[in-house]
Image 1 (cartoon, helix red, strand yellow):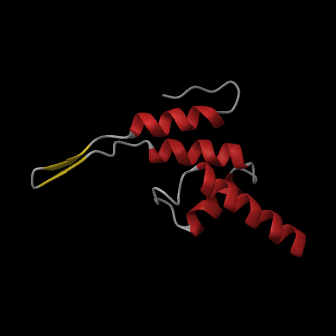
Image 2 (tube, one colour):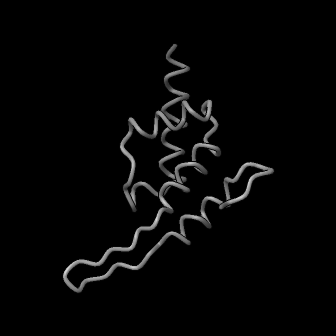
Amino acid sequence: MDQNVNGQEKELTQLRINLREEQVPFFDDMELQRQLERADFDVDLASYRCLIIKAEECSLSVSGLSIADSSAYWLRLAAMYRPIGTTIA
C-alpha cells in the first residue's frame, strides 16, 4: 500500500513539473489526481491532456492592461507528451 501511495505521489510531482505548475499554477492537486486517474496513471498522457486545457484562450485585458495569449506555448509543451497517432486540433 505505501509503495502505491509513494508511486502516486511521485507521478503527481512529475505531472506538476511537466505542467510548470510551480511557475504558472492552474490546477489544484485534486484535479491533477483526477487527471492521473483518468489517464490510468500515465504521466505523459495526463500531461498532454492538462496542457491542452491550459492552452485554452488565455489572453486578458482589464482597464487597459493586456496580457498576451500564451496558448501557443502550452500547445508546444503538449506536443512533447502527445500520444502516438493523435493530433492537436
